[in-house]
Length: 130
Image (tube, rainbow, N blue to C red; front, top):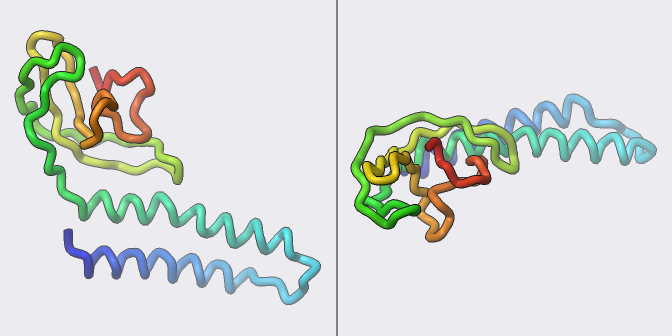
């Protein structure tokens, strides 16, 4: 990961949010609720952009997993892009796809044991694109 590029991109995202907030700032304390909505809204808007910037920088360093269903060996099936719905919004991520010949299941390991290959945003049934 290139931390300088990541830092620069996060700085750009937050600078844009700062400009949008300052452009709409109210001079009156009577607008507290309105300003709270504006500030929180702008910061919430930044969440998926920052997460997306990280996704572009992070590397997929998953090693050959065992099938989460039958525990058999899996084979590399290339990479595939997916759109995930995360807490902050939608992000596009490219991940290594693994295939189990025995189960006829595809799997995207997230690096967390016992999660069935899910990232936040994946289907809750654990199919991982099965």
